[in-house]
Image (cartoon, rainbow, N blue to C red; front, side, top):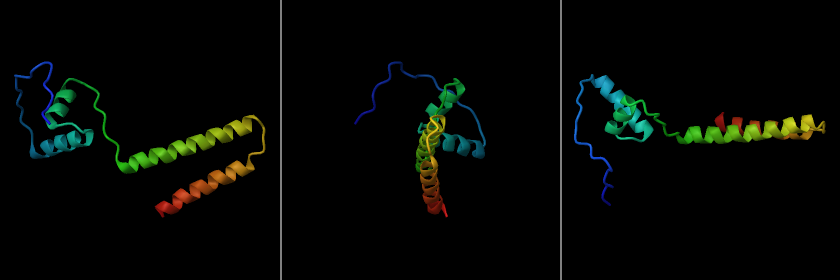
Length: 104
């Protein structure tokens, strides 16, 4: 499949020198952001916000945090409504223990 044509053609080039370490760092950052090196450098030079891809581990951690947030919100609602929430606390503790056992 051919690459889509740009609305504005880029015909000018900019060259700059960097050390081997700087080049590796730029390449690593570009790879981590999901961009080609030229796109990454262009975005960085023009102060465009560059978002980075999350790793599988980070996605899993955010899912766990979301689950904890929901549980604590539920507990907060129970406290506010002055209901007996001991059972809910025990369930949250069990969930935390399950996740900790996966790590250990």
